[in-house]
Length: 152
Image (cartoon, rainbow, N blue to C red):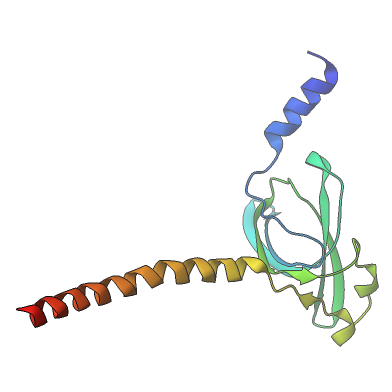
């Protein structure tokens, strides 16, 4: 076995599988383990994804957050064992791969428009198609009974 194949095999074993699909501009809630001495706790941070770079085991993303008047950037390794859970709160509509212009901006300048996804409409369409046949079947049986009653 070559050295590159061995490295790829070790890296593939360490890749996380619970990572949702997200892009730059999305608002995420990241739950990460924090170890303080012998104690361990989970802390959740909500922020906007400003950058995403790398691939494979070394892939990272940068979360930008303004809290209590102070702005902060936090870089997370995507496949870190300290990440407990990543939730996508809302999808963002952006035209750039890196949102460096948001840093230092407050108020409306720092906002990212929400992407109205097609997935929501697809789910609604599936629900409507399932409900339509159920509501039509009782009507047909009632009409059939009515015609039988009228014929007798």
